[in-house]
Amino acid sequence: MKESEKAQSEGKIKKEELSIPEDRKQEKKPQEEKIQEEKMPEKKIQDDKIREIPAKAYAENRELTGIVIPEGVEIIGEKAFYFCTGLKTVTFPKSLREIRGEAFSKCRSLKEIVIPDGVSVMEPEAFSWCEGLERVRLPESLAWLEKRVFLNCSNLKEVWIPSGV
View 1 (cartoon, rainbow, N blue to C red):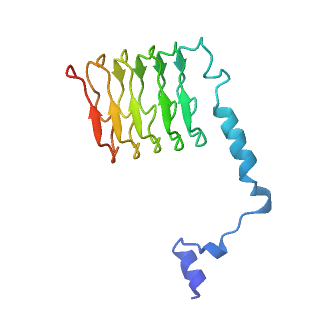
View 2: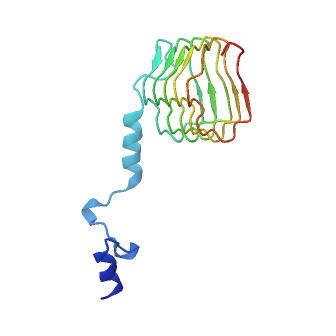
View 3: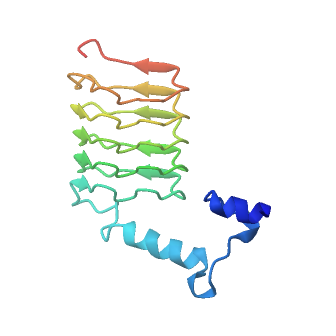
């Protein structure tokens, strides 16, 4: 039995043997741009009337490097900035009250975060897998810290936790 026949019978396919039919081939760039456009909310984040950044609003936007969340925003939705691997800086508004689950999970380029006073809820895994995160300052307004908020933040060196937490 030939090596290729043996590999096929075992369910293995050599890389050279794998071919994609012409009608299935597509350029990745236009498709990726279309997906990216669909994920962006219609309202711009600079809109002063927005109270909540919706779940997954900017998820997987790898080109986003910094964000200033405007005053008036009270809630950052679940996975709102999930897997924004290029995100380096986030400026939170004083109006912020809640950061929901996995909101900034896998934002690997974040180095430091300062959560403003007024935030009372940080749901599990809000900043999980942020391997670049080194410094965190939590607010006095935080009554307790949920489990796994900073899960697998392997480079975390300094965390300021208020005495009431």
